[in-house]
Image (cartoon, rainbow, N blue to C red; front, side):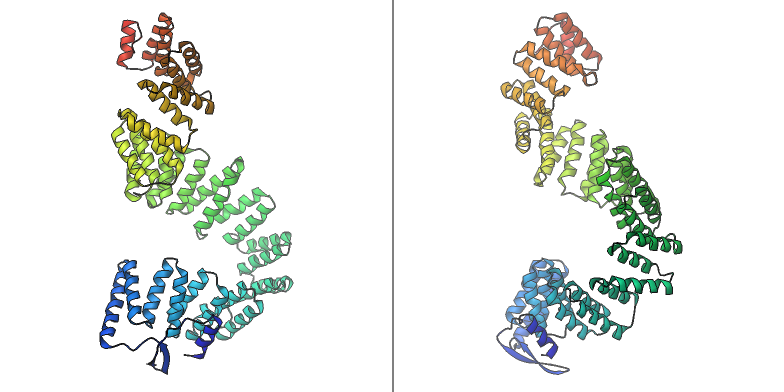
Length: 579
């Protein structure tokens, strides 16, 4: 084993070694490895198992792939290639402990393999074992001395460990091997900041600006140094100078916007952001992040206006980016401009229909706006792409229920339940809509079960309490329980005309006619809530209280409002209440 590898083993708490050893020849002479001497039969078996493992990996049968590599190691415990493949599989499954053990054994067997050390480095990065990462990067820089990235990674690891002097030495090594670069200059500047030498760094950056006045990033970095030193005013001055050199530079504009926002100069912030957003080269994700940062301030009209205009610039500059239209839709949705939000979401989906949340938001709007046929069409499209999302089944089911296709509604809502969603709000609406649909289908047992499930999820849901109580009263079943639920719905949501009508009707069915009259009249006080059903109920109550002429007037009024009930027609013709 080479000395470098041996030193790394000592610093890494020693790799586990298998019991037996054999000699393996390579171009540099004999190397001590672990394992056993394989006979011809074992060699053939190992080869077959290994290639079968690779095949299973290619076709993404990862469990079978792992089993094959494990079988290789049973026959040939020192097979470093199988260790590497198995370690990769474990790493992909987030089993970093086993992955680390396997790949450490692999680099012990074959310390010259760059890919083995790279996997070990990835494991240490993921598990944040930075101290162990450093010697791995040293090995990589020895195996591949022309790869600059390994040297930078080592220097950065020293910085994370706050070993500033070691990092500085690592950067010196990079300059000797690869020469100076802008990246190296920036790295050394970070070291000066960590060492608290901001004055020296300010002097160095000022000199760079004087010698290279067109190099904008030096202005930006100097402004950051000044800001960290508590000199925000001077930082803004430097950025204004940068703006005079490159007026359209998005990074300068964003840096200025950050300063103005910190000073609560929101008009200036917005001016800078508008220029930055007009730059098509500024990353769209950064623009999205900025627009979303306005959302917590949407109680203020100016914040909404700023977000709206920035989103409009974004869709103009990035007409082929679904993200731009999706965020514009979110802004409009927050402003309750639902029709415009709907259009933005549709444009986003026309560009990229693979974003689930846009579909959900679109369906939510269509259902809330009463566009149930459109919700059915879009819901079925969305389900073709995302068949495992309960919310999509819910909104599509609501569309079917509201268009009176109750069989289809029940079927699709049952499919949603099969997904076993953990979102209680979605489940509540599924059971509630199922209750309504089953009742319409006269499947009363299933309807009651669905409402019961909904109330188990939320015992204080006034909508479910009202509907369940009303349908029980229509059937004349469990009227005492129905009265309790109806009364509870009114306590939760007082002055709801529909709930007041339900309570009045239940009291009527309980023959409490005087109380029923009081509640139906309260329901009818809200003119916008008056409807044919309430008018008909009022007529029924008046008739049984002996006010027959007034009852007839209410029945006729119900008919005039569009009721086509056969029973209502009969009441009017025969001038009497019909149960």
